[in-house]
Length: 150
Image (cartoon, rainbow, N blue to C red):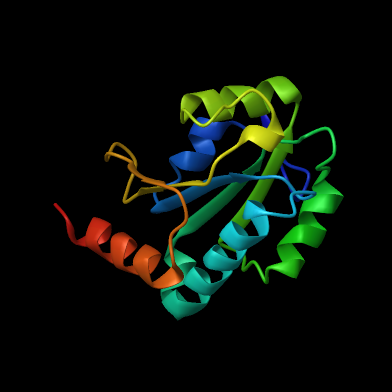
């Protein structure tokens, strides 16, 4: 069970399968290296999609739930101009680790994490896994190709 930044308890499968395409990543708010870069990329991605971003579900799951309270995630979301389609999640340490393991991004502790962005066009469709950093334009391109594929 995860906790969305608005305080609502949610099940990860339910959040992933709400019918919208999903862009998923893992961050923590005290990260000063890759997380701000990844979040800026998503901010720009969201901006480039314009109105089309409203049909998407962007999910950022904290890998440091002990520090990342819902209030802290809301501050972080404001910093990166997250629209309503971009939601942040925290929860127990166990729930965070389970989510990380489900997407093969768990690296033992937060300072060992690597940049990974995951995209899926619809429930039941395969995930596109992007290892490392991606530019906003590359992400828009990958997203549009994913939506266009049968």
